[in-house]
Image (cartoon, rainbow, N blue to C red):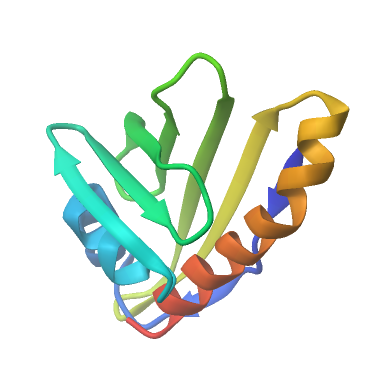
Length: 129
């Protein structure tokens, strides 16, 4: 299952946005208002949204200034959240979040709408930075 967020313009340089997303504590600023728990531990963070199970994301890969990939810490749910960042000029960049997951059809049907809303919220909050 793949969910692609909208491409947005962020009023930060490519390096500034990359550095912001590389500091996992900053993901709390992008979370929906319904967040009930957010804890950073090393190269991972745990978050819980109202009515949803808690999820731990681990920093899997970074390509300086252009890509950050987070993945599920649990082997039960196999997915990645990928941030692609492209420079526009010295003061702005284009960013897009993509969710890629391996779910059975029943699970995919259950999680597609909340995950799409989650990606949209992260994207909207990133655009406001």
